Amino acid sequence: MIPIIFLTAKVDKSDIRLGMGLGADDYITKPYNDDELIKAVKTRLEKHNLIKKQVDEVRDSIAFSLPHEFRTPLTTILGYSDIITSEAEKLETNQIIDLSRNIYLAGERLLKLTEKFLLFTKLMLISRDNTALDESKNKYIDLPSHTVKRISTEIAEKNNRLEDLEIDCKDIKVAILLDYFEIIISELVENAIKFSYPGSKIIIASAIDVNDYILNFIDYGRGMTEEQINNIGAFTQFERQKFEQQGIGMGLITVKLILQLFNGNLEIKSISGKETIVMIKLPLFKQNN
Image (cartoon, rainbow, N blue to C red; front, side, top):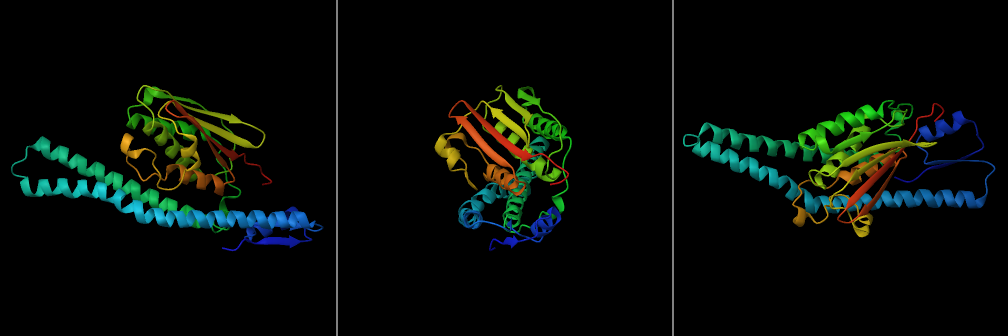
């Protein structure tokens, strides 16, 4: 998709909003100077090229990673169901229950992988179409702390880490759709649990500055090196063989894409082998946005 820049003498806010709503990437009013126009064109082309690069990387990564990720739960489902089918008369009731439970868990994992992949694909398409989120421009969440507590508690409880969880969040109007905010919280809490140790604290704390709602996710686990932070991308799982973690590895890049769509930001600070701090920023909702 080619970036579009409106160059016009119309300077009213209503005109600017109309122009952006029609799909413009930028809106420059007259009079203007050459440097301003060149900078705007350069910035939009760089953004366009970055998105194209991300799409190309995703395409290549899918071809390599997706078959393996789907194969693992499918192997479990087929293997255990074959045992039940061929040896049902020999199996005890508790054995059948155990096998059935493993089939269910594998199916649950397969469904989750599929949903994550479909979400990721949707986000990549939306990132190439500026009009896709027009309906969200005047929408917001006003109780972010409730969402954080609800989702974090559910995930921590499911993983027997409820006692490790500490939450200190404030409420204010934040410019994002609830569904996407829930995805961000879910992905970051799951990552914090997956890559930290039972008994170590997982802290979620918020802050509010002039323009942004800030959320920090802190865990005291394996941490990340500077190289790993710089190389965050789709389908990437660092040191997977060592830590034997399952999952398609789209979590952080999915969060990053959502934040970009809502003019937010993601920052990661870490000490390898000790701790990781993931900070997200989302713009506060303002009526005249």
